[in-house]
Image (cartoon, rainbow, N blue to C red; front, side, top):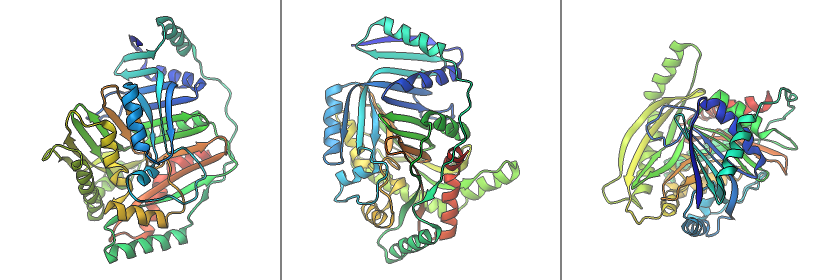
Length: 430
């Protein structure tokens, strides 16, 4: 039984800031923010879930079966993440690379307190509480004022897990797999990290979000594990019987010179390599969705459209499908995970080669964060452009990657990684 209250917000941005700071008292926090990015498929402008009433935490072994049972038993809102390494639960794969973060492979919680913001409307849902609890929390949220003290300057030493020469060698090996016909495309990632380091997670997230303003921003806290995400990419959304995926493949830099910026955007739209990358992943997504979709319902609504964000231009496609009313939401996730944009084609071969060539276990990076509603609807992002932090181990990590195809140039792929890493490095070092 929930207590529910709806109010009108006069200043949405101010309230969002107060709400996010107020949430830091809880051990379980997931904040999802669209940053008012204009898009066709958004349910909420921002969502906050805090304070676990129940949770599920597990390794990859039978993870989707456990999540299916948890969702069926709670029949409530649940929020959490799926790590990339859940690939080991759906295929005969393994992850043996170095893991400095050591997050559980899957974590979801049922929140006691839920805030849903759309336009200037705030809907509050509290589990097993009385109306006075909501009123008291609202007073505390509105009373929050930002401290005036300025944080000390950081002294963070960012290291590369794969240095430039080794990166070139590994991309060359991946190209050899492509030329042999083992794969057509694979997403190859590298980690940047800092050891024995402390950061202020909320301050870092706010800075990252401010310079990126992406549509799938996330602040996640589970105990001492944090994800600070400026993701521009949706993995998968279900609304009613409709399922939607929006893979990103294709990146171009931005420029403050409007003419030059327009040239970068046009060049991306006409880049045959980037388009081929995107189309290959669209075909992979169509194949994944067809496993659970009503026959003949999978369609491509957008192909290789260019979207502009603060840091980069991106090439995005939109693939939709319809499912039967008795299809379990977790079955949809299981049959499409991991997302094609972070793996390659053919998917299983690409994941095996990725695992052999990468130096780091991906974990939450290139996994997904989101929610499942009581009705079985869901929305999940792709965890990219994100800083991951284990406060207990004092380990900070961010990874970036790019699609390797037969047309890839190792130097250009390396430079694209640096473009993608720029926002994370800037907020950590400044």
